Amino acid sequence: MAEDKKNFRDKLEVLAKISDYIENSDLFKNEEVTVKVNLDKDKYESILKNFREIDWKSEKFYINIGTTSFKFVLKK
Image (cartoon, rainbow, N blue to C red; front, side):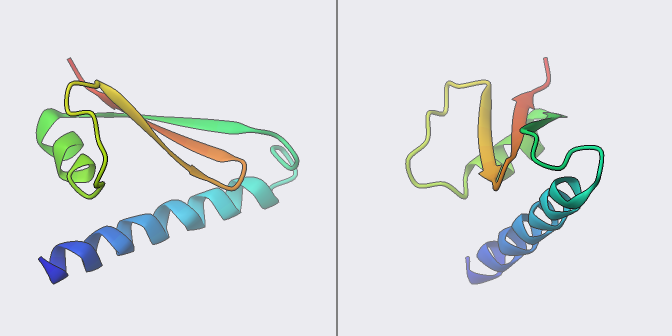
């Protein structure tokens, strides 16, 4: 389980780097940006399981980092 948490932290670090790049770019500076990610069921659930309070019936969830919002959507 500890390794799962470390792997998830690594994934969050990647999202933080993407967010930082977006927020510091001239094109998106001082703007709110949403990045939509369509995921297959297995990948969607592997990310979702890292959160304590979740709605397993939901087909989307958000992770907000700074002014960047990552929208994860279950691919149909």
